[in-house]
Every structure is written in C-alpha cells, then in structure tokens.
Amino acid sequence: MLVYKIVGLIFWLLIIPFCMGLLSLPLLGRRHRTPGVALLGGYILQFTLLEIVGIPVVLLAVYHGFSTFIKWYTPFLVVFALAGIWVTYLKKRKGYELNFKEYFSWKEVSWESLVCWLLFLGILGFQLYMAFTRASFDGDDAYYGVQALTAQRIDTLYRVNPYTGRSSPLDVRHALALFPIWEAYVGSMSGIHATIICHSVIPLVLIPLTYLLYYQIGRTLFKKSRGMRAMFMVLIALWQMFGAVSIYTTETFFLTRTWQGKSFAGNFVIPAVLWIFLCLFEKEKTRSRGLQLKEGWSITESGKGILGEKKEGYQGQAGFWLLLGCLNLAGGASSSLAILLSCLMTAGFGLLFALKERQPGILVRAALSCVPGGIYVLLYVALTHGLLIV
Image 1 (cartoon, rainbow, N blue to C red):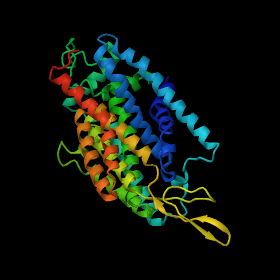
Image 2 (image 1 turned 180 degrees about the vertical axis):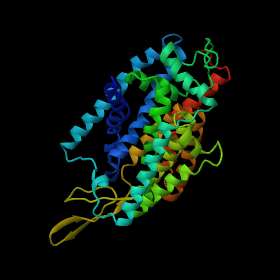
Image 3 (image 1 turned 120 degrees about the vertical axis):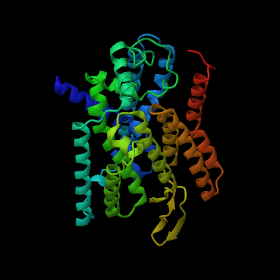
Image 4 (image 1 turned 180 degrees about the horizontal axis):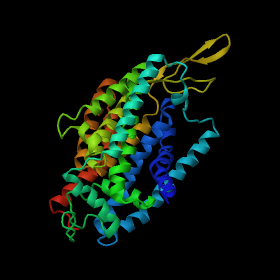
C-alpha cells in the first residue's frame, strides 16, 4: 500500500507535469530545451488547466463538485501528457533532442563550484528535513487545509464553512483560487489524506521546484559562468533560510507555509514572471548549415561555398509568450492577487522590452498574454460585487 502511494505521488507530481511540459519545449530556443524547463512549464500548464476546468465546476456544481472535478480534470492531464510525449517523439525523428548536457556535463566545473553545489545541496537537504519533520501550523491551516479535506470527505467545493463544518453559500472570495483543491486531488489520486499531502508531501515538491526556478534565473543571469550559478544558488538558499525576519516575508511562507496558495504566489508565480522576461530579453547564438538560413543571419561567399555567419538573435520567443499567458491565469490558483501582480509585471516589463527593441508589437504580445488573467479578474469582480449570482 505504501509503495502504491509513493508511486502515485511520483506519477502525479513528477511524471505527468514533466510530460505536459514537453509540449512547450519545441517552441523554445534550443538552449532552454532542458528537463528542468519542461518540469516548470508542465506545472504552469497544470495549474492553467486547474483553473480552466475547476472554475466552471466550482461555480456550477453545488453537490458532488469534487468528484465532478476529478472526472474532468484527470483526462485533460493525461491527454496533455500523452501529447507532450507524442510531440517529442515526432520531433526527435527530425533531429530534435532534449538538452541533458546542462546537468551532466561537469568537465568545466571547478573545485570551487563543486564545493558551492555541495553546500547548496546540504542546505536544501536540511530545509527539506526540517519541513518534513517540523511541520509548522498557523491559523490559516484552519481554512486552507480544511478546504482540501472537505473536498475529499464531503465532495463539495467551497460550499462548506471550514470553521463550523456547516453548509454555506459559495465562498466567492476564495472560490477561484483552487490550490487547496489541487492538493485534495493529488491526495485522492494517490490514496493519501489531504492534511498529510499539505503538511508533509507538498513541501518536498514545491521547495525543490522553487529552487529549480531560481536555477533557471541564475542560468540566464550567469550565462557563461557555472561557478557564479552555484554561488547564486547558495546565496538564494541562505536568503530563504534566514529571511524570516517577520511572519509576512516570502521566505517565512516558503519554508513554514509552503502548502498555502499565498506562498506559491510569492515564491513561484512572481519569480516565474521574472524568469520568463529574462529569457525574452536574452539573445541566443544559433548556427546555420548550408543554405538553411534563419532570421537574423546573413550569408557570405567563400572559396568553399556559401556559409552562414553566426549571429545573435532572439529565439523561442513564441514559447515564452505562451508560457507567460498561461502563468497569468495559473497564478489565480494560488491567489487572486497573484494574477493582478503578474499582469502588472507583464505590462511593466513588456513596456521596457518594447522600448529596448523599439518594437510596438511587443506591447501587443504582452497585452494578449494578460487576456486570460484579465478574464479571471473580471469574473472575480463580478462574483465579489454581486454582479454574478451562483
């Protein structure tokens, strides 16, 4: 039984998101086609589907809402995961491949970098051990944890008052933030109690996932220096561990309230917006062969024929814009405020990007990526101000 539960957790928390994330890789530049980016993209896509599928169920299903949600959400996850595998298989036949060298090429790693990586892994292991064995409890657990448990036990979504256990009208303030429902879903699919999922399992997943996101940020900032990436990760790990200067900092939420949506908003959604725009700003070197020229290339003639000159240009922007659009909706799973912040950041960074490149079209792409989030905000306003009665 225990083995079944562990296999279920690995399947729903690692394998399914990774396979879903494979869908985004063909749209990204070659340098970003790594397993880590696939996992991050898969989680963004997973939470996007959580909102797309879950919100109508929450609003329309008064009874048996959770079982209805499982019935619809599971096929979407499986289909998208299979689609990711199929697309990767088709692309591989044409020379497409994942970039595993990023994680297994240690020839250029110095002893100093190796020491930093070992130090980071030690800090990460300590944080995971403390999160698992010294689970923190606070007043919000009476709401968020109980909402996940209510979904499992009573089969309703946001229609039971978690403080009294009695039926109540739809909690419109929180009804669109489905992070507790996702935790209940993972628990149900793995055969584990929702409270155990929240306090023991989710930190073991989201803490490494957040560090993976910070590694991608460091990989973009320190493109040519592996040693600096290692130092960057050690600095981030120490910052997270000693950043609990008050109960309101993101570092406090990161390690003591990891399973709450507010923590996911501050520690994943907001940094993910920064990562995507760093990748959009980045220029990637590409190489052309023979007469197959790409955008940003010129051709020269030499004694041996026509050659392509290696130049720098923006690659894989379509994939990152699509991920940004998904993120601006996926953030709503954690908190309604997360969507407002991510859309504001998209508008601000999009304006800077447009001014830098002198391309007004970038503003159009930024605006389009905010459309899903804008629809979410309008729905939230309509529910909270009584314009839409459910």
